[in-house]
Length: 458
Image (cartoon, rainbow, N blue to C red; front, side, top):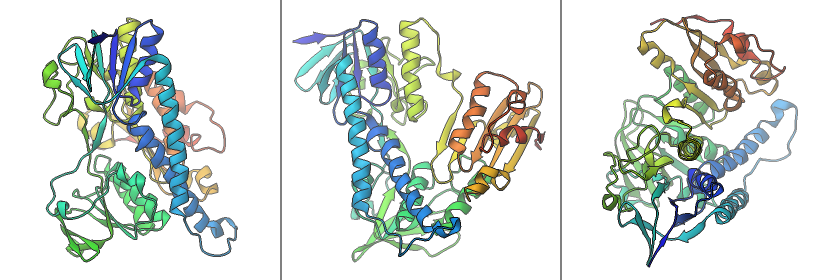
């Protein structure tokens, strides 16, 4: 027997529950399928738990610097990893329960592995459900590359790292991008010795060179060892230790450690859905191919969230559900291409990024202006004794619209939004430049910076 619904949503990451709410409120009978944990990556192994642990690491870091603020702490600052994990787990459980309760109020829930039987039918175990509208929200997982010797060691990913209730004495992080760097600084501050191995010549290589260099200086200043230009990475065991073998331009060819964290990208959870039975097209990396309104190659099937390769952030996943709901229910032609790229790297201090990089602006060939200000000239940063980093912004010289910006510094993940909102409004940069911001804040220096624009050299 097959049960009919108006809509089926596979997965309960950030996009799925919100879309279920929209569809249910419109009077649709909705089925939601979840095979593991409600809330997806963000709630269980991504944003929420990692930022909770970042907060614990920050507390330890500030406590060690207490004397800089005139505060005396008797004895050494120690970290109880079991309590760190317990705090993180409590927040995860609350978030997961909240998502599950929300979904149950809007939908009929099926627990199990969903597989397409056809373009309109999905099996969940022995049960079959059908609908004219199916939404795929299955997210992604850590990529595990084929590295020699990896099968000889026990390694961690961002997911299994959430089960760690001890302090790895010597942690090797493979991957010098966003996930790897957050974990590297986090565990260094919690007390581990940390080495980051990165194949590229610089960290966070998608960022501008000055941003990458500043990130490198921040992490190096905290005692994190960096091995860049690492080629031919392999592993072996030496007693109870792990040896990472690298071919670098500098440094020894072997790096000893006790634990290895793989942070070398993500892959979509699309390989076991039976997409071929539905005729849904995927690209060579396994991401579901979608158009500007998130429709797949099969009418009546959409892909939302990380599995479509259109964002891979919690905020873009949520926005995916808003785009689909607007088009389907409100006849509002919202599109993925309306989005402005925006994200943060949650090292401390954080990096807030919107729009184009300086290098990307230069490649456009347009006349552009740029302004840059070190955080040492931001009074709020000075007051907090957190003056690492800088902010910069790029502007189109003809339209006077902001093309992109980066704020690497205290509060950068929040302050960047005043720039982002003006970009969405397609307003000239003078709107911010003439605004009166509150003192003392990081945001108040954005108008000052915009008053110092100079031609961007090509």
